[in-house]
Length: 548
Image: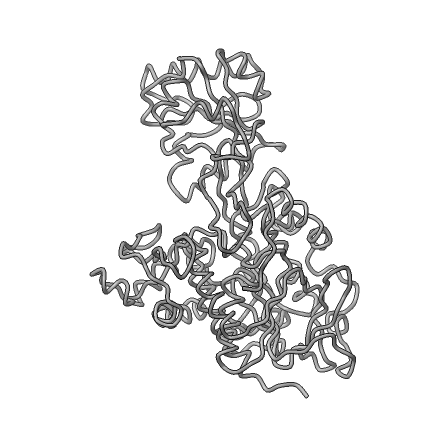
């Protein structure tokens, strides 16, 4: 392995802040004063610091799948990773992958499925906003990708297949434990792909951030400007550049372009280990690429009592990250949620069943700065099986990684109100009102059901919610070959079929930087699409005619 840097979490956080400071500043899309067709032209005969056949940005699922396919086709491949560690968000994800349609793993489990069922369920769950051609391409290659992961890369699938939201049959595959890769989550898929890329001799460069797409006079993409070690270098791609550069959910400026509620009150999944700032998506737009589905922005997650979505310590590709952070709330029937003024704002049960869209909206529609606390008494904490000793001694350095200012314990509601910084009289009155609803069995404010216990027995406990931008739906327009399409193709009155749209020559994109895979909602398990389209991008990039 070519990765020797092993960092503590604190050092890693400090380092990534330095790497990404400039990227966050480039948040607004399309702000260049130069015309798109002139902005990045460069002389083909200009000197290059490095040359390769296929130049890939990003070392997650899409990027490394593209690298494997391109290398197997005989291309010389270089992967650029802006981070101090490989893997991006792929190494941090839970590992559910939607692979339906009647694949070998489903067959072995006795599950009957068809490609049409798989297509219809994904289309419906995304509110019929997925691009039909992209979705069909994924369906057509899904079973082949399962075989590739299992037979070529050595992934061992769990025999038990999960039925996630939106699907009428179980089709979410997860890796089982194996000596060939660490853990059993998303890191296992990634590690198997990484190992194959390493075996094929793919060069992977850390702390190399692509900042500019370079084109010849006719608009063909010929390489990238890359920032590394405080200098800017020029990398030539003789055949193609492939963007596997991830999303933009941690770029607050980009989020605010599409929804003014998505401000700094939100954190983002992947932070502080991975910053998905979308700078290369902006750069592609600057040279004329189109965008799709940006108005959906992202879907959300939340944690209780911690500012972290997950913890990865030590930061190393052989160490699976932990998602067991914060206090678990798997039943909201006896939990009271209050906002910054000490009053309730929602039927608490709305925070339970995924996707929690009514809960998301009720939170986002609050006036900023937002603050949401979950409050229980001793009986409520016992029913949730909370370890109250950890609440009394919160620490971000040990499981469940509680943040001291996100946790409060008090003998009275007045004291609790003081600790969580809400008006005492309002909180006491609201809990009294809630308890009266428990007695009567009718929630007159939000029609909450299932209330069985008042919040009355001290000590009282409160945990603050951290809200996360988790995964955006939108991104660049790419066709079924993973070629990036020009924005100009979307301007006329008559529609142009996706695969007939004009492309930016020698520029490919796959994964979270592409829009249209699922439409308005992804459900769990979109990583399968990143793998499929990453492979397609790598195959087609390697087949390009090399530049002189």
